[in-house]
Image 1 (cartoon, rainbow, N blue to C red):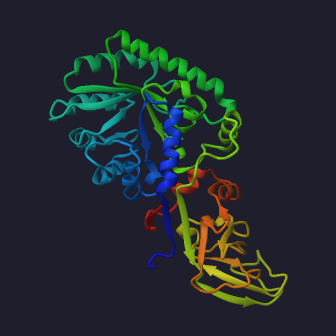
Image 2: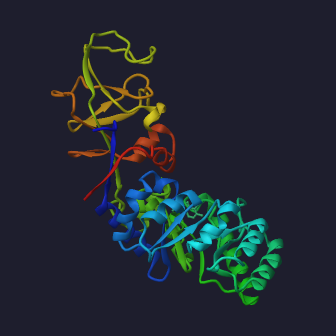
Image 3: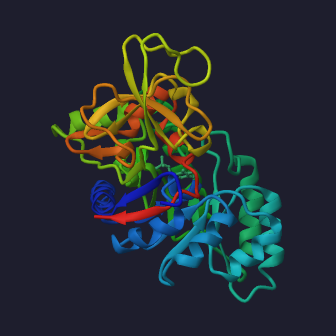
Length: 383
Ligand SMILES: *Cc1c(COP(=O)(O)O)cnc(C)c1O
């Protein structure tokens, strides 16, 4: 083992989640798998081929850098869409590589119109509309300008989509705001329609949209977190399981994160462990080190809080998590030796550490924890 930890990606879990979310979205919308932020930490290059083998042919990323990486590994028949940052310098590259992208400012629209005159392919753009999130998107007063530009440049620009993004479709407390967004989006789309501007795709749903507002899906869904086996939040999980009257979680976590025991040492009673004085033994103890610390994605907030699995037992992290390693209390393990498998996230025997319990302890959302897993950790496919 060259690296100090490794990640396993379960193909059967991935397929299970994708098929579940496809069923929720229904047959008509195109299904785009969101692989931004290094595929939510799973690794774009490692995950994308597995996703293709589950029957997916559309991917969404945030930036040109991610699009470049996806382009290298994807099949030709797959579509690629950039939802966020494209510098003017890279518009030509995106157009020539047949990559569609969101346009949400006049500046970008003007730049696209100019560049698309010289490219061999038309620019495939998705006009993002402001409907209530107040982050990105054209506001109402911009629409005349947008429509005029689209009409003038019809030969060079293909209006592939009209889209918007929900401002928190995972929480009941936001539902009024979401219904307003849906209403506004429909009105804006009809306005374009009346101008003779009809895109191939009208789209607005993310995972929480598909799960909580399935009737709103329209022509394409952009699903991220649920494909990886996580609920957008706990509320959506409970709502779904209760409304569907199903006993079990239909999603399965795709990612496991593992390492090995690096050393085992005895410690006497009443000794401090690791830096400082945050942990002191209250019995004769046995401690083990694991070569994973906050520099490798294991949050420092898990000091004296986190757990890992060793020899099918849950053992606590004691003392401060260091940059490169953590210390765990293995006094209660009858057998433990250097080289034993350590599970930070995933299963061992009948025990498991899920990211949500991990992130509850850590007080951060699934999204944040996943995307902080270093890109350098090797990823392996497992069944
Ligand atoms: C991240 C993102 C999504 C996917 O969101 P999930 O909650 O992970 O399903 C969809 N659309 C846009 C614009 C996004 O930025």
